[in-house]
Length: 141
Figure 1 (tube, rainbow, N blue to C red):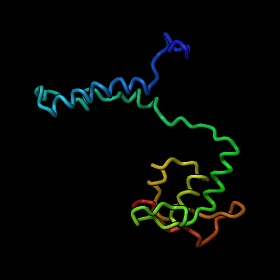
Figure 2 (figure 1 turned 90 degrees about the horizontal axis):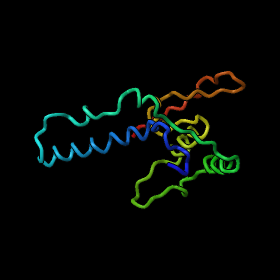
Figure 3 (figure 1 turned 180 degrees about the vertical axis):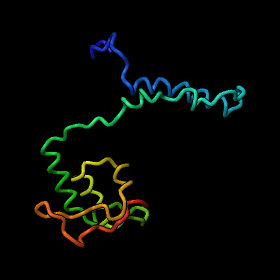
């Protein structure tokens, strides 16, 4: 803390949540192993307050231009040979390409991409919607 100059400063929301996670797991284990009687629910009694949860969120980072160019090139040129097939099961290359391009151009996290609905993508050209060009795929497995 001293090297970062954070002595005497308030804890971050993530640190507060982490400090609550340890006793929550401790009491959950005590109840599970039947070392103490179950008189309260640790998940409820020691949950992170909503005020602290509201302060926690994504911490976006700036991606350098050269790294972004490599990601963009790889996403646009992904092929079935690039996908792992160790157990014989793999998603179609078209689905991987669609998810990759959605991630690259929409800037959404993986959990946000997984919640997209079928037909939610609308093609545009010069700011005008192109009729009949909706992608009809589902990202939910």
